[in-house]
Image (tube, rainbow, N blue to C red):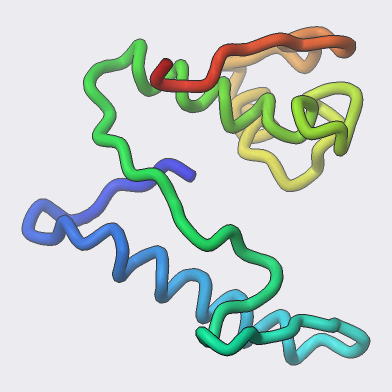
Length: 115
């Protein structure tokens, strides 16, 4: 996730915590949804920690955005970036910033953003 905080607010942790909590509350209201909460009060759908990184420049932004768009392919959820319906990738395609066949389809290899 990429986000911009107000200039007087740098509390990424609080924002992530609020986002996760709000999402879990909404999700648990859905019929047939099995979201379990552990002893720490954490939902079974979230990774425990997150990695915070301040974007340095336009190239760093593009690298991280590419990483996010490629994640569903990297983790075997879809064969092509365009096949993941929940991605901001589709916004970039609609804006004419990326072609629909960006990154091809099979065997996409990308280094971890920031490495």
